[in-house]
Length: 220
Image (cartoon, rainbow, N blue to C red):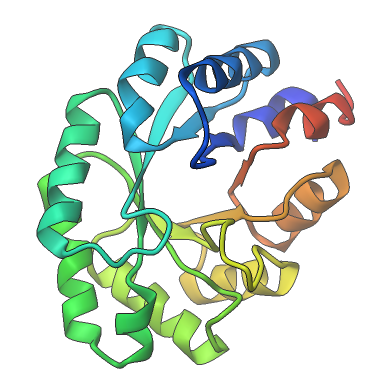
């Protein structure tokens, strides 16, 4: 895989709670310098990122309900609509992990569907926390996301103390979803070797703050 091919699969992520405007603009420079496919930011910074990347070819991804997913559905819907209005071309919707694990599958499926319907034509990836899910819960979450109209699944927020993506998690997601849906690996992807392992396991996208380090190690 060439550097350009790898860069196209990366979401450069600047999601730290302490991130300032200058940090978002520094992230823009990383995206432009390396030809990265997408830039993932919090809703506060969608306008700044979208304006800075206008006509660059890089897409802006906004997280919704990040990082815990416990906001009420109406709040997530409003946040999704506003993020798209302000320039986001894709959304990473944080799943309500506790509701899934409590067995409230209808409520979870309805929430996903409500957000997807609110932003027609906008790909919505549903973010799990695979590190705290059993394999059965991961499969269930995948089913609920797809039934709700999601475009794909992201392994994790990258902020849970239990950890981020693993090759085993990515492989399970790909086996469960099949080839039609996206699998985004996130959390702990900080080297070229890990990035390539995730892709080999079935990831179609990678979300990482370490984009420059990964791409500088890749072959042109």
